[in-house]
Length: 112
Length: 117
Image 1 (cartoon, each protein chain N blue to C red):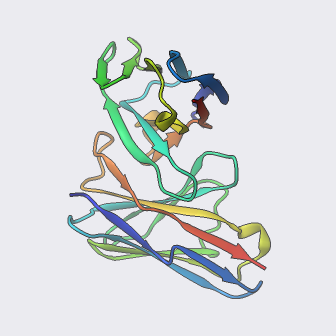
Image 2 (cartoon, one colour; image 1 turned 60 degrees about the vertical axis):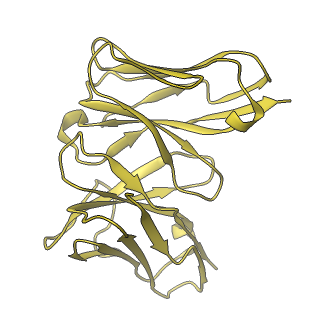
């Protein structure tokens, strides 16, 4: 069973601060995706990283895929209250499984 | 584009009854659909993978006779929870993909909240 360890599980910071969420595994994934999920809704895809060492930016969000394709990070610059939500990382292609392997998620609260 | 819908959004049923949840890809043909379950404060867990026209592949620990999956067309997959019990209460989420490859993006539905009394 492939596991994705996500940290931290809970994070509450002030508006304007920076933060990083980590996603680590002992398994190699073909691709890794980051999602944001609002309560009572399905996850919404933020980004997919495929190549080891790849860096993608989405406004104030920077995503990085580890060189060995086992880990990833999400960095948010100057966090805003609108960034509050559950952030999930998910790996594809780990051990030949078809579906996605999700991390436990990071509950992020940005206080105004 | 790539919109996935689920019906119903929420359902409350009595213990012992069966509940059917629909997952539709509205603007694309989904070769593969996935069903996930999410318990409160936890992450999504893959239950099964279904390919159009063939039997679903279930993850270890998921009872195929309890969670019946039908993927009869390229735009519709159904999950039937048979003889539901309170421990089946959960948030069920489907996703749909153009293809079965690991780099094919999965588009998620809005989820169905099932409460079994």
